[in-house]
Length: 361
Length: 229
Image (cartoon, rainbow over all chains, first blue to last red; front, side):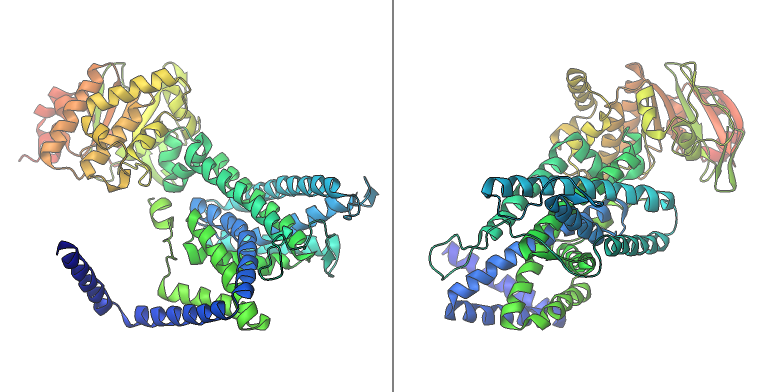
């Protein structure tokens, strides 16, 4: 009897919330349900294809999520959209291919790692490329902040934003001079062979590689932010800079560390992007950066879990659009999602943290 | 001490001393420069001219984040607690610069003794607490650095009279336990009650300095700050 009553009141509450919802919420609910229903019907018709596409979406999403974290970390702490961040990702992929090629500024340090040398050399090569790119991008992030943003700490926000766009162009052109306008191929160091038996669902070693790199990075970041002294200092600075400095926290150093973290994640993401897609190009940071920015806004900018959720969602939406709508439409679909989020839920799916964290004087 | 906000001359030659063990209060109306004085002392807004001498050492120009190591802690105006951190984390941030675990634990126990309410709320997000509890947390957080000098900026702001009385009782107790206090207050009544000496600040200058008891008798102070005609 009581459970019946509870169920009844719950359904009444649901009915009430539907009645009180705005027309825009109803419309978006209808659209989302319709899209999900279409996807479900596709999934039922060809479950193998759907699952394979989902895997690709998750892998792409992981790469995007790592970049999105950089946007959101920096926004959370100084309320700046660091437009140079996507290009830092591009530099990461260039550093990765440079390490793998063994040649830098015309000097050959070791033979290029092409994938013919056996699994062990491949693994070691990839790990070194990852570590070097992470270090390089971390330092570039810190350097950009020192040179371009720190002198403008007390300027109007627009000045810093335009500087960020300027830094983005500078990095892009450095990439252009460095590797030229053509696509740069990556050696196939990680097998595209399917791990799973049969052809039904495709889950390649490449996919596993991306997930195996991303998950520890996410776990590590989350541990760093919530448990370490420096991570707590970061949260304190994000919430109230003046109070943080009264607690003895060096605010400038904490901001530098935030840029370092963002850069490290972008570096790892850049190398994975190259290895996963087999190519990189000087303006890849622009497109991937925009996707990642979209992901950060979708999840709620300034919110770390939001960036991860948004990254995976954008990855999956992209891969589903590739398969079921057409590759040419993918960008349109993704940016339509961005526009819809900005219109109907400007604070993002999980809510932005800027108003609370960066608020105050 | 002369301080500026941009080109605005906010402090026009403020000079004050706080002796060890005292409670000194700085009273004055809105915009008189009380908070600016504290910001000049703690390095958030370094004075353009003048000196800050603490424990015989000139400390003007020391960055704000190093002041706490010198032994100066502050409970700022508007409390400025970290809203999305728990009470415990807020208190831990107060001891950010320290490494002595036992000492930190002792000081946390001391804070809980002074403010039992904080212990009840230890896992709560600070931003969800009431104004009075947040004020307790701000003072507790400042005490976590075990400071020699505690700067209190408007601890009565926005609190019900009963709570103000309780907070000021506790401030008195903190002082009796050996912490020197510089108290900035608009509520001159309660401030002069617990202070040993007081300064009256008007448009960036000190216009009166006397023992608290004397200030309370002063007809001008009574008229301007104690709400009596």
